[in-house]
Image 1 (tube, rainbow, N blue to C red):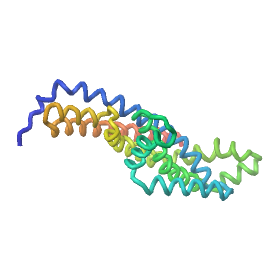
Image 2 (cartoon, one colour; image 1 turned 90 degrees about the horizontal axis):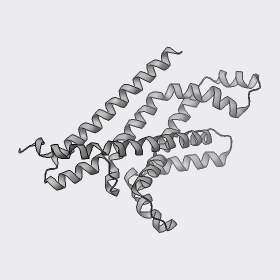
Image 3 (tube, rainbow, N blue to C red; image 1 turned 45 degrees about the horizontal axis):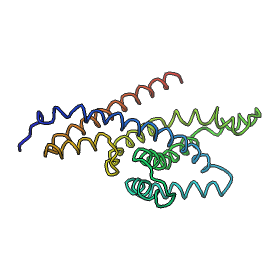
Image 4 (spheres, rainbow, N blue to C red; image 1 turned 90 degrees about the vertical axis):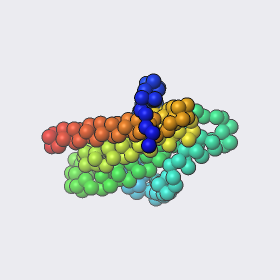
Length: 219
């Protein structure tokens, strides 16, 4: 096997610039997905059947279809529906946010249901309004319990962000592919891209465990 990593050395800074694009997509999509996921989770435990139905159907659709299909429908299909072309970055953020919200909503729902019912009963006995009880009492405890699952979802989102290369978003994977085409050597830039993703995931894992330990100390 003819491997020569020195051949791609001049292109390494170009590939590394893709980290910013990847992180921008992941961070924005992760935050939007988390916010929408909380709303969906509340819908799922709501006493209103219409909200239950909407949240369940939404989750079923976005968990039951491939993320890459959702991405391409939003990027290529949106102009046909709304008559306006959207950028690859916008399409990536929207599709990842909507997809992530479906998974996060299930995680948060499970976390809310796992909170001791005595907490809710005590809050109701003290006359705490329902929305304030959820915001100040139930959700904080639920989020502490589901932190590892949320970190896993964020890590998965980081890895899956590589599929934005199919809509020509200039992320790590896309840049590695371009370098491979220019050098006629794909193995080396792809291995380098894989190393970047691996280090990003390891960093997120370490950060997640540190936050988890900090939260346990506060108990």
